[in-house]
Length: 251
Length: 205
Image (cartoon, rainbow over the protein chains, first blue to last red):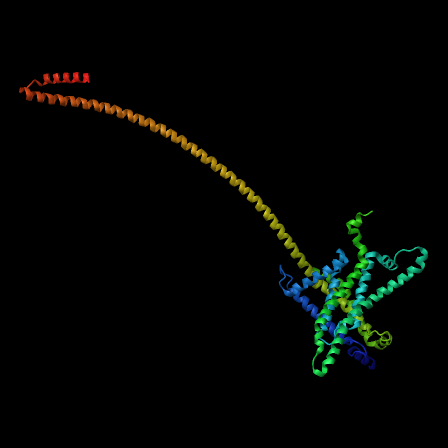
């Protein structure tokens, strides 16, 4: 009983020195952003039957869809359209998660654990698509770098492979820490500035709100942009060479 | 309905895995907090891997739902709209070419009608001119007839008047002679004399 009680307390209350909400707190925030996403999308869906979209939610959703589609096609190439659902979901979850930080004392994206989850999905998806595009062997062969003479290959290729693997792992940290740093850093900055003005009852931190709004948008964009770049790196062999008329015509 | 049927077999495994990850994450978060604190906080990372696992679970559930229920209908709506626009443009192009064809047909028809009308007018004018000529010649003939008749009548009337005049002059001459001579002359005899006189005067004239 004592064990269950301790576990329950751990789920509800965050441990000492741990940033972000507790597990249950995070899930409540996540439920909130999922609810907000589905409310937005539900409103958007109502206007989809019209010949011309007049519903403002539908218009915003269409603009978002076209923006993400342009992002994918611009970075990945013509085959980038198939990644739109994944990138759009990232955008919605991260944007709404970031936007929560504007209204509440914390947000899912101010929690490194949540961000790491998003990064693991992103990088895992990239690896999966890389394997689908090049085959498992081809994909991992890509990590080994260029083909070298046998003497060099014995020493250099394992090193390159190791560095590439570390690089792939670091992408997870890079994606998650950047998001965490910006959103949680925003909170810390606002709190610190509020503390400065506490004696005069002036919430100085509110002057950071425009920057926070910008951060909300920019961080969602950066996460999606980087995922597109990673996808482009692992899938560009798939179509681009064969579809490039100049390369196809070259001897 | 069939779409939703197609959705569930794809979505259900992700839903189960996602829910499993959320429950697993909750278990990890509840039961390995101390271990994680020892391992991860030593690295300076404020991480709870239970939350990470649960976040992945949430994503696995939310992503296909967003795709199926909202993104695909939007794509279909956009595709339908594009298709409608393309169809409308094609129809407009077709109508424009039909209009151009009709216009050219009408212009040809108009030109042909104008030519026919011109021909008909020319024919009518020619017919009218012929008729005028015929009527004029008929009128001229009729006028000539009338003139001839009139001349005949004039001649006849002239003769008649001359005869009457002769009779009258003769009568007057006799009456004058009777008055001058003072005797009743034999009328028939005297009349013959006057007639002979008049005839001789006419012959002189």
